[in-house]
Image (cartoon, rainbow, N blue to C red):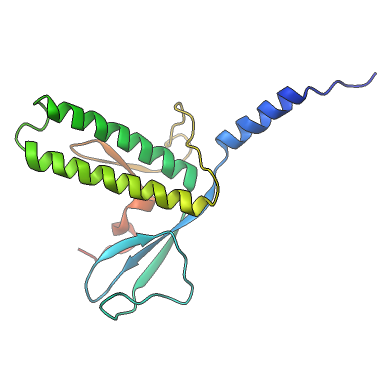
Amino acid sequence: MAKVINLAERREQKIQKQLHSPMQGWIVWLKCPKCETREYSELRMPEGRIHKCGTMVEEHEVEIDIRAELTVSLRNSELISELLAKSNAKGIMKKFLKSGRAMLEHLERSEEEYRKRLQLMSQQECTPYPEEWDPEEKGLEIKKMDPLGLQLTAARQPELYFPDAS
């Protein structure tokens, strides 16, 4: 007797596998030894880079799961949006209403820029992990930024790669 192949089930299995499979990428942390500035790039350049001050920068490549980084960034944006909504209604940021709001807006723009770069890295449509995905369960180390509660993966902590930088 021949086995019946259910194409709809196979398609659903393939979609589920794609939703839960990592997408490998790289973030390159750059540090100018002269200016003591740190920034990241999604572009790998094996021949090195020159900073605008004319100094060769130090580089450290960090392997990442693009989908995990995207998921964490979206969760951070969601938290920032909630904090911005609360700051409108006087509360959590009463002391710092103007500067706190500006800081949150800056953080949100940083998250948006980070997601744009992740999309560039993936070179295809990148979707976040499902809502129930837990980064700690998958072995991703997360650092919480107090007092806001934003999450930082190891890839977004330049002090891990250039500990002497201030």
